Image 1 (cartoon, helix red, strand yellow):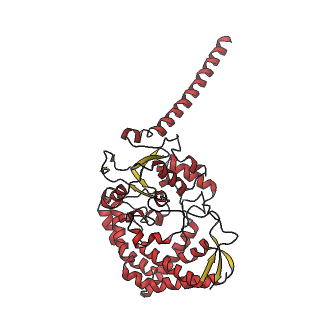
Image 2: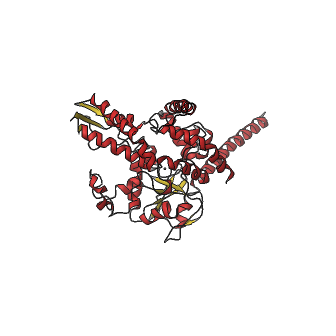
Image 3: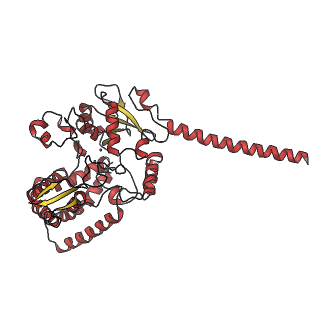
Length: 410
């Protein structure tokens, strides 16, 4: 009986030790995996911020203490005085570029070494995964070449009456709020067809889960039906466009609008996709596609490694934009623009992978601004926040409580 009890105790002790050993093995493996890249910059002699296991340098961002653009500004100020520096997003090293000459080299002069963006390769929706934002290599080049004529000068001139009509409709819409307080972001959203607002439609639990996957298991995202987009609104718009496109094709009528652009593009899509298959846009980031030696340094960037440009930090740097928090539109006059490197204003990206609709967006914004200033007087109201408080949940530069002003017709 005593022998049996002793054997049982020994067995239980071994089992208990086995569980402890297994637990320690798992924890050790996780620790080694998530810290294995933490000497990435030290080995190359690159200044870097000391990371924390699992989150890297994203701790304040994940805890909601910083917005995305505030994080970029902090990173920029931390490395100010260096040409570049390293941070970690989870366990992924990311080389931050500050030097204007290096920025120009990576995004323009030596673009062939950095043709791809850091994309979220989600399985669905298809229109997101197949967008210019996510396409890579020769496939991106083929689609970009096909779409570029869509935004030619002649096309924009033809679309001008439609843009003007939309602007006039926005003015008519605002007249109903004469001498009232208006939230302008939502109002302007009617003008810009803002159906792709990111992150705000996502419930908190889904947002936390997505952050977790992006940091700890980024490869898993392609197998999950996750998206930053408001999928219901986006799918509804896609359905409407498909029906309208089919009607336009059946009627044979051609007009100078975006629907006609979709029709024309779909007719060329088969040819372009076959050609592509048969041959092997707070920051701007680029993925290295072939080995690159940073000019003036002994640092070599290898394929698959990511470089990032902290836009908000650059745009808040007094060296380039004196009194950056002040509203000074004259800083963009030609005589003032010429005093700083032209490629440092990257609101629409920079280089061959900049925003393809840049000229269309600027044309639309300028027309809307002229109409609004001619017809209304805008002033601060009780709901106006000064200074503006930014939404720390959003990936976009967005006011936390909206942009409220008093509107008075002139």
